[in-house]
Amino acid sequence: MNLKTKIKIKYALYYILGIVTLGTILLISYFYNRLIETSITIVIFYIYRGLFDKQYHSHSIYLCSIISILVFTVVINLEVSISISILSSVVITFILTLLSYYIRDYLDQKVLINTYRTKLNNLNVRCIENLTEEELISLMPSIRYEVLHIVYGYLHKPKELNASGYAYRNSISEATLYRYLKQVKTKYESLGLNS
Image (cartoon, rainbow, N blue to C red; front, side, top):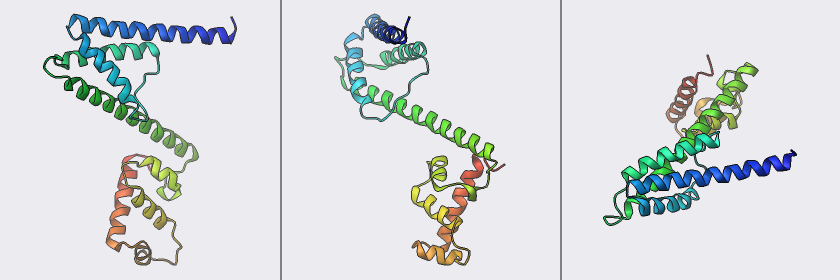
């Protein structure tokens, strides 16, 4: 069997599994007497997914199907009857897609930090002063870019320029500069890369 045929079979199985997953979700919703509500939720789910640049996806399509069925079973139990309010489907679906986005973002950040940690350990570069500005930004996404930019600039300033002069050039007080330095160094130490 050639590669083209294998790819076609793989995509056919993928779509069949998708239809089976969707059918299972709708069957569960039928038993809970929430078929219309769940159908609305599924349509809105695909609309809301377009609002976010990424969503959680499992590494395996089989695991993805199982997770989808479990998540929608929980959603089916949370939905109220359409005769009471259609708004519950809209709100629950938005919360679901938002959670999916944040889970994917968390996992991406974890992978990114682990990648940089491995790279830094392999290079035996553990000192914050040896990081590039891009690495600082990638390792500490919770700290504002402006703060990281100022700290990076301070760590790489000319030797003849003191802290007071550097702070003045950046229109901040010297106390603010030291507060930024402490914030970044504390965060970097919490990552465990400098041990």
